[in-house]
Structures are given as structure tokens and as C-alpha cells.
Image (cartoon, rainbow, N blue to C red; front, side, top):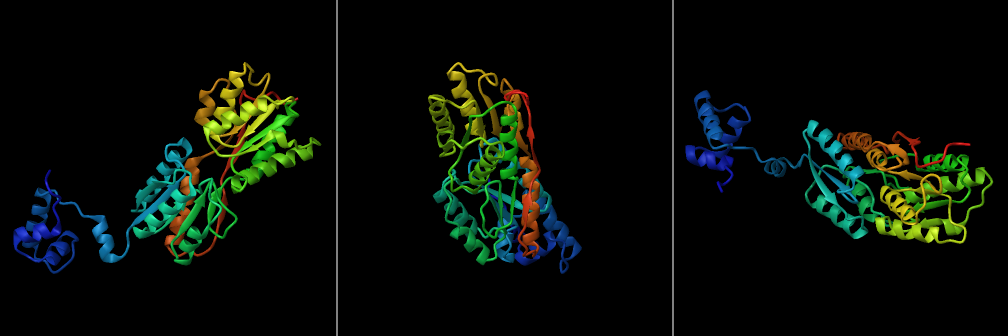
Length: 336
């Protein structure tokens, strides 16, 4: 494999200083037209490409940003990353994409690695285990631009998220208006702000319609397909099982539907289901799933704009509410 050609290699071949090669390739003065032409011709022949990281070390600017997500293989995060990367490229920035494996230890490791790489800023979605924010507070103290998205926290860091409480309330009311009275809630860890907000909206809707909250119908655990499956099967085995499920995550939604089908129950005749999930997953399922719809791409654009503002010197804290709405499909009974 041929070694990558550097400016030093070009200078050595031509018997000139590296600084002369650098000035010529940057179009700067102090180089004769004949010598500039020789340098450019040799650079072309040798397939020279500038090394952005070498430039970063010299000028103390990396022109890179970090993106940390809980699971880069999970469709919404993949779409988010794709949009941020496109926006960054237009701004002349490179992206370093890191996966925290949805763990606190993984998240801290990602942040520390990005710090060591001297990135110009970080966009991050919290892991479901994160309750200690000292690693993020350190970034802010060190004036490293930081934006949270999707899973956020009640801390003074700019963020982009949907109105989880309002949307969960609307989804629960839709289930009640379709005739459901024993509505189960499937969520992540209680200490995750996203879960807490969505559960609060669910409880608000029950109170609004005079329906008591039944603790046995509220399942808040680890966000995974297996936990969603086991929790739903446990719900279905109750003496008085639920007649509807509000699932606050895509994996939990699909898991609950599989569990319901495994018991020979029909959706929505025997059980209504609403999920917080991707639109394409809703469309591929039969029946199509009623879901809370938001755009990971919009998240990406808004999060990058907030980060770019900080990189350019804006020190204000912004909490942006992204657009989202309840999309009614076939997995819920019609409003009575």
C-alpha cells in the first residue's frame, strides 16, 4: 500500500522548505509562479490530500464535533445522526459518531474521548442509566459547547426535545375516548426525565377523566425489547388485564404487540396500542400502529443549529420544543 504523501515529502522531492510548499498549496504569496506550478503539479501527480487533523493541531481548532447516542443502530438515532452529519458537512465540520451502548459508563467514556480529541462541541442523548451529570457540567465549565437531544435533563444545558408530557396526555385521552379504562403504561427508568414526563402526562389524563391510577398497570424498567415483552406478558396475566397500552419507546411498542399476538388477542378489538416510535415502523406493522410522530431529522437540524451558535460564541441556554403530534392509525379503537 502506497504511503500517504505529505507536504514534507513534496518539499523533500523538490529540495525546498516545507513552509514554501504550504504557502503554495494554500495560494499564499512569497512563492514564484514557476515554483508554485511545479509544487501543484507534483502534488497532483502524487495524489496529495491535506490532513485536516494536522491542520487542527497547528491552529488549535479541530473542525470536528462529537455525536453521542445510546444506540446508533436504532432507526431514530441513525436518522438523527445522518441529518447532523449533513448539516455539519455544509458548515465545514467533521463528525465523530459514538455509541454509549445506553449505559452511564459508556456515555462518560465517550465524552472523555471526545474531550481528548479537542472537538469543538458535542451533541448528546442521555443513556437511560444517567443520573449523575458531573461529566456534562465539566464540559460546560470548560466552555465546550454541548447540546442535549431527545433524552434531556433538568439542568442548564441547551436541549431539543418534544413535549413529552403533553403528547402522553393526548395519547392517553385518545385511548380513553376509544372506550379504554384499564390503560397500561410501558416506560423506561423512572429517573429518566423523558419517562417521568410521559408518565405524568398519562396520569394527568386519567385524573382528568376520573379514572384511578392502578399501580399494577404501570411498568417502568429497562428500555429493551425483552423487558417490553416480559412486562406485557405480566400485564396480560393479571386478573384484570389492561384493555389498552401506551408504550413510550419503539422497542417497547413492538415487544408489546408481539406479546399481545402471542396470547391470541386482536389489535384493536381486544387491546388498543399507542407507541412513541418511527413512522416507517408504524406503516410496516399490521394493523398500522397509532403513534406519537416526531422527526429525528428535525431534531438533527435544530440540535446542530444550537451547537453551531455556541461554537460561534452564543452563551445563552435554549430549550427547543420540536414538532410532534399524535397520528391515529388502526391499532386504536375509534373515538366513541
